[in-house]
Each structure stands twice: as structure tokens, then as C-alpha cells.
Image 1 (cartoon, rainbow, N blue to C red):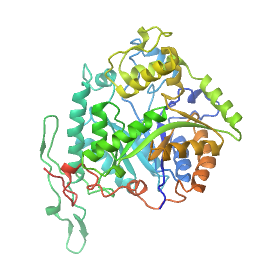
Image 2 (image 1 turned 135 degrees about the vertical axis):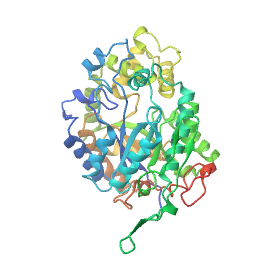
Image 3 (image 1 turned 90 degrees about the vertical axis):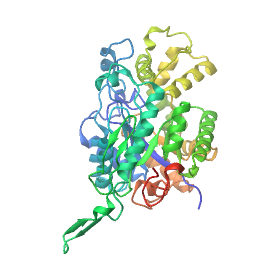
Length: 456
């Protein structure tokens, strides 16, 4: 069978996604805090046979740029106002039947038992359509919201995340698949011999277990990550089954793809079960010139200061103190190091000032923009897919829901005509959509024992 690509739709439960211009666009809906908007988007993505909707999230309103929250609120920047994505996803699950739902939750400021229970519940309620996007959080502001004076250092965050994910997997594995018998005649509901304590006692987390819910349809959620630093890429290659990537250049995407696949193989994993998803924003028109007009209209709405506010959040570094018309300086950042490396690389390559980077960041957090007719956009997707850059793509919107409607109505049929994308869902669970193996088989080799139990 011809290799087919996968598709996700990028969302934040807020007025702003990657595009900071989206909420200002006259074609965008304005009710971002009621269920109807998200139900509509979910139905559009399911109509397009998307693998999943992907919800990013942050745990604090922006404060890093100039140490003042008034400008982020006034300009409506990313994370100024968001709903909890797990609740939004549960709402979408109730009005869809096949669309996967990927939810961002932090492995720094929660406890493994709490998140294992949340994701196990969502996997049951969605009949096996849930994914966990694992993040380690970005900023001091997030730390302060959870009662800490300082954010956990980068390497320490990943050490905690390693233990966190392993502990959650142990909890999801604490019920054997056939533990529940529900035998009314005998009065036996579950076999206690098939329900196991976890008794995890590590340097960061303790939990007795077992999880107080039966094994869910997928056993555990699909694991997603977006590692970009050296430590982050190792973590992603060890644990993730889908990896979210941002790089505006084909050469950068190819290098990342090869690197991640090689690292996954070094961890004893099947690299075909580690799916790499670069993201892009499409602008689709009846002609190329119409698409270019749509792109120009959107990009002109992007405010450079809004972009720099979000860059400051993502890097946990205050960019208000630098000359806007100077190149991006080499500075030490503690947040998302990979995105800052991309910004610095673009600044050097194209002789861009900090103001220029702020403008690009506001247009879409450095995402590439695929522009043209449906055929043109499909050509760009196919070239990237066959060019060793991707297993699938995360589609981000310039206006919501218009971008998703255009992509589903015009680009998806073209991809289907070329045999690059499914015409119908062939499975029920998200693991099936992504062509993954059993949950236990996709663990790192040192944890894999078979039968759904972990090596000690």
C-alpha cells in the first residue's frame, strides 16, 4: 500500500493560536469560550478525516515582556485567556466519533496519578481517541502560579518528566486487559489478581496505585512531544509516538526528521512508530493571486510587539530590553530553546532585525505558510512528505474556522485523489488512525516486557 500522510489540526482554547492576527481577522468567529465554536471545528476536522485535533496550552498569562501583563491583555496575545483543553476536548468527543483529541498537560506542575486518571477517563469516554502532548512548561510565571518562586531548570524538568511519564505508564498498566469480568451470577465484578499496585517511590514522585479505573481502550493515550533541544529530542525519541515540529525551512525539517528517527532507533524503538508532524499555515484561493492577497491581508494584521511578547513567553526571556532594529542577539534562554534557535538562524540567514522576527512570530510563531490554489498547496505538502521531512502535518489556521473549512473542502480531496490521504477512517482509536502498534510494543526497549506490564 502506498504510504499515506497523517493530519492534525492545531488549536488553543483561546482567541489566539499560532497566528496572533487570527482573532482580528473579520472572517474569524469571536466566541472562543463557548462549546459551539469547538464543536464546529471538531466536526469540520472529522469531515476531513483528520487524525486528531491538537490543543496546545500554557499555564500563565504573559508577564515576561517588560514585566507587565497589561500589554498582553490589551493586544490579546497567546495565553492571555485560555480554557482547560482537557474539558474542551471532552466536549468535542461528545459530538464526534472518530476524530482523535490531543491535549497538552505539563509534567512539571501536576502529579502522575492525577494526569493518569484524567487521560484514562478521557480515553474511556472517547472510546480510545486521546493523546497526551507532554510538556515541561516554559516560564517563571507558570511556576509562580503553582506556588514556586522560580521555574525548574531545563535539565531538571526533563529528569522529572522522565520519571513522570514512566510513573503514568505504570499506572495505566496497573489493570490487566481482562481484569473486569462483571459476572452477575457469581457476583464477581473484577479479578483482584489482575489488578496490581505500582508502589512507585522515586526521586520526584511517589504513588502506591493501582489506578482506580479499568484499562482504557488504548491502554494509555498516544504520547506526543515537541522536543527541540538536545535533551528534548532525546526525550521525544524515547517516549513520543507523534512529534510536533516547527521549522520554516525544508533543510531544517529534513535534518530534524532524520535526527529523530535515528535517536528513536537507538532507543530500540520502531522509527516508523515515531511520527513527525511539522506544522504550517495554509492560504488557499481559487487562483494563486487570490491566495497571495489572503496571505498579505492576514500578515499585515500581525503586530510585531505581540509576537515579541509571545517569544518572551516561549523562551522565558525579556526581549523588551533589546533594540528592535538590531539583529537577534545570542542570549541564554531557559524556555523553548529550539524555537529561539530557529529565530536566531533566520535572523542571521535573512539579515532580519528583532522587529522582523516579532512580525514573523505574530504571523504564526515562525510556521511556514503554504500559499496557492488547492493544487499548489497539495504540491507543497507532497513535496515535503516525499522529501523526507514529515510523516504528517499539523494544519494551523489564519482564521477560524475558515482555514479549516477551506483545507477540508479543497486540499483534502486533492490529497485523496493523489492517494496520499485516507478517504475514510479505517479504525476507531487514535492509535489505529496513526498506524501504531500495541501500546506496550511502542514503549522504549528497556521498559518493554509484553502483556502490558513494565520492566522494573
